[in-house]
Image (tube, rainbow over all chains, first blue to last red; front, side, top):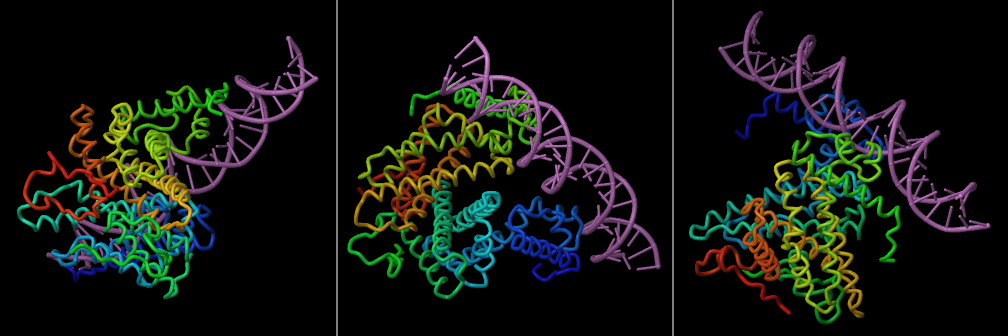
Length: 227
Length: 227
DNA sequence: AACACAAGTTGCGCTGCGTGCAAATTTGCA
DNA sequence: TGCAAATTTGCACGCAGCGCAACTTGTGTT
């Protein structure tokens, strides 16, 4: 099953890639809302109609970047040991986002998108889709434990909160560092992810600047999870 | 300022209301996607063009229900005492959702929407918009405290998680009770909101069924917040 | 009350989206 | 090689969304 890259599959993947590439190029060049599906089709070397065979809208084509990104994070989550605290699994999975190769496309989308409300729709959809998949993944994990009845509320609230914290870290990081992808910038993102999950793990019990000073930027609260 | 309902304001409010009413009626009658802006305009007694003076799309018109709902919740949050633990404020604000008059329109939207991916876009947008407003509200509150520098990450992560938990409670409640608005059903919603905020406040430290049994449906973990 | 001005509504026209359909083209398989 | 299935493409249609220029209605002034 993993080794069947038939000609059809390859072509489809290539076309799909060509579409998203063309979309991103046009987004860079003309800015959001200033190009049409026909422009994309022409740039990708296909017909307008074929575009719609792959994506239902321009936004959807661009959101495929986000989808790919979140899917890989989810993949990380799934292959975590089942006996690990679930927040720790989530943290580890989110951590993989700080890799330059992975985060780079998304960061660019952020730059070009954030001001524009139109595009953010599909982005929200992508994050929401990921939330649902996390719920499934977590449900499967807990299904392994025999006795316990599965608490759907727990699953939904947890998955939603984890995703929210990931998004919060990205938002703050982007507001702070812009499109900077330098190692220093990525280190900040990494730390923001850790801190966000830390806040979540401690029930948001430590409002801004807990006791003594020490700016939260340098040595924030470590992630000393309950195990 | 509160007492200037000029004729123009009243007309606009009435038209706006007429549009959303007509939209909801058509949604009920014909189902999502089976009616046009022109239909709405006709039912509301206005021109197609005027519709677009109020809303940029059908979804936006329907989402005004959600917006109104969340806005009132936000209003509750803002008028909470500033020295109250912030999670408690959020819990109290979300609690007001369990009121039949308030939750009824939203519950109906849920019934008609949930299966349909098209509409949920604007719903997500509404929740996201509310998140941003919570961030602002919380930022203002903390700005009252003199010494502390404001931790944007804390704000974003907190607001996002609170909203996620509210959404999670609504999702689970709806999956469990459907469109049932009976007192018993609303009691369940109320309890789900409490439980969700409880999970959040305890850092999701108690996975499904902590120690001994006792189904989480009957006597779930109470909200014994840190004060 | 008549006026002028601002605010809101409406009709018109245009571009572009999204989709059903059927013909044309490409790929998989025997 | 030739047939069947999958995929691409052109065509056409209805509708969304918006700019624009009249037109109507509310507001405040003399």
